[in-house]
Amino acid sequence: MDQGSGLEAVFLDPVGQAVQQRWADAAMTVAFEDLPPVSAFPVVPGRRWGPGLWWSATTGRHVAAGSNAMRVQLMVLDRDPDMTGLAGRPVRLLWRDPGGQVRSWVPQLFARRADGTALLADCPSHPDAGGERARKAAEAVAQACADIGWTYRRLPPLDDILAANLKWLAGYRHPRNADRPGLTASVLEAFTRPRPLIEGTEAVGDSIEVLPCVFHALWHGQLTAGLHTPLHERVLVGPQEWEVPGRTGDTE
Image 1 (cartoon, rainbow, N blue to C red):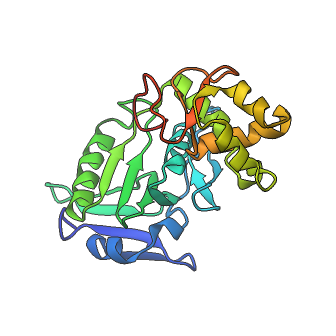
Image 2 (cartoon, rainbow, N blue to C red):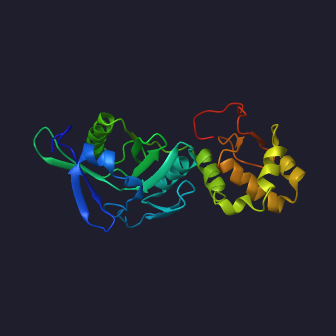
Image 3 (cartoon, one colour):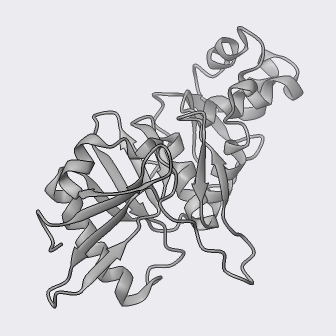
């Protein structure tokens, strides 16, 4: 199990039995996005947030999440229109280091892209999380992914304001927030030009009914707003193609 052709993958089949297979073969044939975690997320005593489930708007299913940092990254990926599948810890990678010792690593996140390629990712709470073992594993997993045209990343924590805004919008990600037929079309029409959130909302109707639909459209990228400053009733909201002034990054 040296790096390269000898690297192997371990995952659970549909009936829960562990399967070990050559990494390059598994990557091309296994739908990791449909698999359960190959091992449970650890429960760390004293932490305020433990393992849980994230309902994905992308798949309509729950994804296992092991930490608050991972849940935040799941939000970002769940909002990305290029992603078609998400899973938590579906595969363990095995290889031998230069000294001949077997090493293993379970990336926290798997995300399938629309073109069939995939992202394996870890979600550290700070840049040095995991220490030397995590750094060496990241190098091995990154190479394993590059060899087959995939990507591995250690996803950095989000800015606090951006994370808070995404958490707010995520509360409206479910299709039920599109509400009655025709409401979404009216909302999109109200923001064909950028205008303050409350102004466009009240132009459609009762804000109690309309705001969830506006937030749903913002989550799904049908509308756009700057998310690096706190959301408020006067924040400018515009159409999907609107270039938000001062916009940075890919998460807005």
